[in-house]
Amino acid sequence: MRSSPTNGQAGEARQTYDQKLEFVLRRAAEVFAERGFHRASIRELARATGMSLAGHYYYFQSKDEALFRICDHVLRLILETFEERAKAMDNPLERLRLLVFTHLEISLAHMQEMKVLSHEAESLRGDYLARIRQTKKRYYDGLVSILREVRGDRRGNGRELRLAALSLFGSMNWIYTWYRPEVDGDAKRLADFMLGIFLRGYLAPHPVRRAASPRGVALRRPIRKE
Amino acid sequence: MRSSPTNGQAGEARQTYDQKLEFVLRRAAEVFAERGFHRASIRELARATGMSLAGHYYYFQSKDEALFRICDHVLRLILETFEERAKAMDNPLERLRLLVFTHLEISLAHMQEMKVLSHEAESLRGDYLARIRQTKKRYYDGLVSILREVRGDRRGNGRELRLAALSLFGSMNWIYTWYRPEVDGDAKRLADFMLGIFLRGYLAPHPVRRAASPRGVALRRPIRKE
DNA sequence: GAACAATTCGAACGAACGTTCGAATACCTA
DNA sequence: TAGGTATTCGAACGTTCGTTCGAATTGTTC
Image (cartoon, rainbow over all chains, first blue to last red):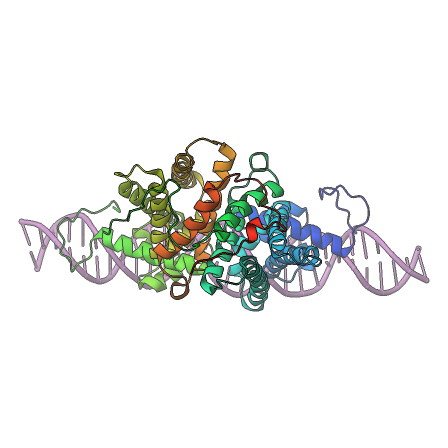
């Protein structure tokens, strides 16, 4: 192989096709994350990898396929890491904690891919989009069923479960817009914080009712109709 | 020249420049929201408005300016509506509820603009980006100071306030990815739900500590009512 | 109707894009 | 070393893009 003099990789060992493919997609994720998928061109990717424009088409058939592989990879990484870790775990609360932690841990470790997944996956088309949505749905359904178990299924209300799951996903998936490692700490800290807030709120009585003021202050209708 | 015309008292039947501008930007928001900013072309926008391609440049100087105006408009709409409504309100908990409700109410009423704001604003450049970020920061700072008041400043920890504010924004700003009016209800319902979860968690003791052990009875207490 | 400004348009520009393809180069095995 | 496969490249293709500009159209005012 070319072992191109300035390809920026520390490894001097020979690279297999799979290793180079991984390298290319990781760089692609960085470029897509920084510039946005449609704004980033394969020529920019070429600058980032040290390869030629045309050379990239040896590793993917189209720009869309590159996007799909990035999204699919990190999405499956979260889902399958969680499923693997949760295998021998039956307590639903532990499973929920594990899901949040795994999601955040992998999000922080693969921030660019996660940004691409959150930001650009829905602009895929056809089969690529269908497959990503299917995996997303599998993940979402898993969270909903855990939440149902955590709550004990006594007050099973599908719409509340839906809102709870999507609110939690929202908090987690928004991270890439603000996370700064030196300020916000590691995945464990974030997971403890987010799950702490969520769990107390989710498990407390009257989850959909208006929250009582902690000092008993009656809450009046604040909204002026215009 | 293209400077804003001042044909003052045009009848309601005829469209003023400002009305037509608003119409064009609303359609642009729809097109950008559906196709993504960089994917959508001004030729598509032309199809959506019934005007010619070139005709649009009478209403904005560049595609970037159109994006900026859409984002700036809806962002200011939320912020200024909230500030106006909150003027005569001093209870911090009421202000927090008002902020969440206003945010969600305007998000649902201007879903396309909100999607564009959340999705594409950060791909602006130069002065446009700086101005959007400045307004965002004003909004964020407002929420943080409300959260500090709500908590009573007893356990003032800047990093916890930051995480709380950003988690709440995350839940709210993720909505455009999943909201379906017939399933998820109106802004009041969403606001009550999200704020309910958030508030109980945020105001409860030891907000960052790990929640009680899953084996403990504490979190698994049977939940009555309803 | 004439004069003028406000608005819209057709046609084109240069640039950038994703993609292709045959040739060139690097590597492996024998 | 020779021959074959794997990898990379330069150069181009056709398309689409944002933007421009002079002309045409519409609306308003005397």
